[in-house]
Image (spheres, rainbow, N blue to C red):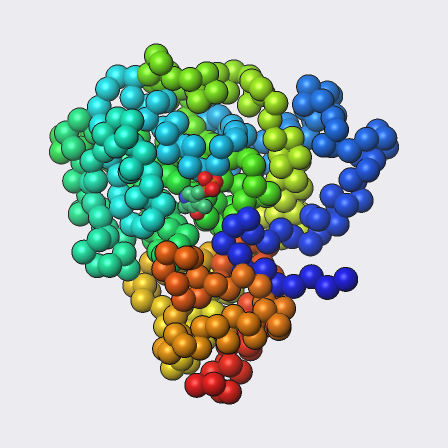
Length: 366
Ligand SMILES: *Cc1c(COP(=O)(O)O)cnc(C)c1O
């Protein structure tokens, strides 16, 4: 059996050690004679799995005790709708930073349900640099400020945590779509009011959505909020109002264990991610054949888009890289070119192999 290096943007690579552990436990979980997939979500075994996963994610991210950690479904895209339902009980307008395609989708959903004000945008620079704090102008009735810490398609990442400051100096909650950067390094959760992330990038398999919400925000839902959309209902039921995605939850828990015990926590992960990204960007910058347009301070560590100087070579690049065991390097269909996603589970050896391939490809074809 060979495992190739997978640079897919999502569903993304999972740590081989996690998949091996899942394989060992697949048919008979800890001598119980059944698979986690076949367990009641109310069983003592599964409740223990769920609680351990929450404890581990709290420990990894140092989540303060006044925040709730929810394990939901529907992906990050469902959060685009859940946010206006849960936060607009007292009215107001959602405010957004627009830095790429995912933010644009969040804005469109908000417009559809509740209106939206774009408080700052990267449109003028072609989505190649994020707005600075001083560029952010909230509407006077701002209910919250939403931004995307890492735009997965454009490869544009914030190098700071924006604040939701109104003209009179008061603050509005900051909501962050962290789907493609969560757990890539330590964060200060207290600087955010809500963090959410679809699991399939840096957490585990698709089907699970992590939401971290400060507990006082559970009281702001609009009365017509559907039960399944309501953070408070989900928090009161331990994210088990209905049947949760049990197997995704379990596998995500194994990833948290891997981060703690194999990697050594998020500071170690951070250093490794810095090294991986630096190697790939150095190759892109040093080779004539490749380029990446993003301002250096905002280059994404997790998703590295690049184009070939001659796009007639794209097909050959993709075919030959795949043959070399380097999978899923094709850029998003909306932007073309190439993209290498370097999530936590992509080993440094995979980046080394990619850099070797790119250097060799330039030598042969450049
Ligand atoms: C992938 C992604 C999404 C969409 O996630 P789904 O879970 O498929 O809805 C939203 N935002 C960002 C930043 C993403 O990377």
